[in-house]
Length: 511
Ligand code: ADP
Ligand code: MG
Ligand code: ZN
Image (cartoon, rainbow, N blue to C red; front, side, top):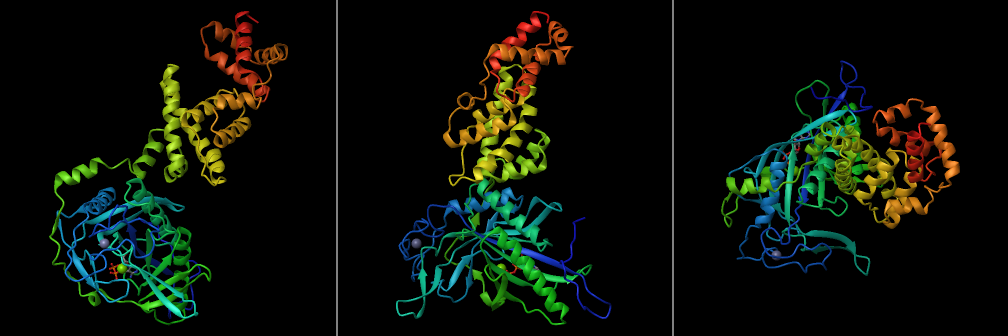
């Protein structure tokens, strides 16, 4: 059973049977600019930020008589996405013309896919504050982007519109969900997880801020418990994940107010105003009939044969959901830590590197199982201290996995204190120096005065009367434990090598 939630604060006068609790129904459409070198149907470059109208040619300018050629890489990106969301891949698809007039569309039609998308019936699962959630994905298809319009004023203050055709003809993937989503948070989480997936499989950087990923939400309300959907409104112009959540939350409230007042909603498109914190009417919704879709006569049907699909599947990296499952299931990380590490590429890379180093260290010590507890400690350091430091830095911050593994081992066996360890990590991120040297430089192993240390060692041994006997019985680990106790007692300031020598001397001397 999926968790259901009614629109917060959305009760009102309602019908004769008393106040109505509204349930939100949300479906999301995402457009993603695919990371290819050339455009969808011509060989123009896709470079972002090029001077206006320089990445153009007769094909993407819609001159008469030109012919489109399919960009194979763009098709592969959609197929990879389809496989990654567990969708069915159509063995044969075709292209359609979506006709409409607008200055951003020089041909008067957009080449798209109407009734035979490349991928259909997929899904995406992720965590929310209310638990795990799965969104069913209706389809993912390929189309071309339109030109960019810029509404501005000229030198005389007259309102003008400029058009930049650099964006016209960029490969664009549209991913449409079923109306499965019930809350603004689920919608935001869906968009975040989708972006993570797209970045992981390398099909797009999917930056919302520069329009590489555009999220549109279809929102309607229905009385809780009712099957039939209400009138939907499409919300656009959300430029961040935060905006997605806030825009939808506001739209749900607005619709509840309209319905509670006994009025009806119109099917329309509304824009999100991030500054005024509200949606505004853009246009009354068009229907697909208006586009007079028909098959594109200039392009052949597209066949995705099994060998091609297999090659794409084989090239997919470990997907975020599989990686989280591995971290929780095999390494014993908390779902929270696993989620944080997988969501952040720098943290993820650091964790993997540090884990490999910790495994190598443990294997060299002849205790391969020692890597498992190390995984949890490493995760703590990565999600806690490393990300805290990294987020304060403009450069994002870098750390060496091998050095982090060494540092965590030092803290783990008490050679330095946790507090000192944090300082060491901050310094390592700052300078890239090896942690051993930093520990020395900061004087965290400073107490080398044998007399002072011997007193601390004697105290610890006295406090652990069984230790000497254990040691004589062959339990070498006792040494590490006692050294750790001395380090704790000296707040990480003792010279660990000297302490270790003293501990052995005392134990062997039968103290
Ligand atoms: P269009 O072609 O007009 O964009 P679609 O049928 O492709 O319309 O649907 C667009 C999105 O709207 C899909 O994500 C779908 O799940 C969602 N949707 C459809 N009906 C509703 C509804 N009543 N309330 C909320 N979302 C809806
Ligand atoms: Mg739509
Ligand atoms: Zn071109």
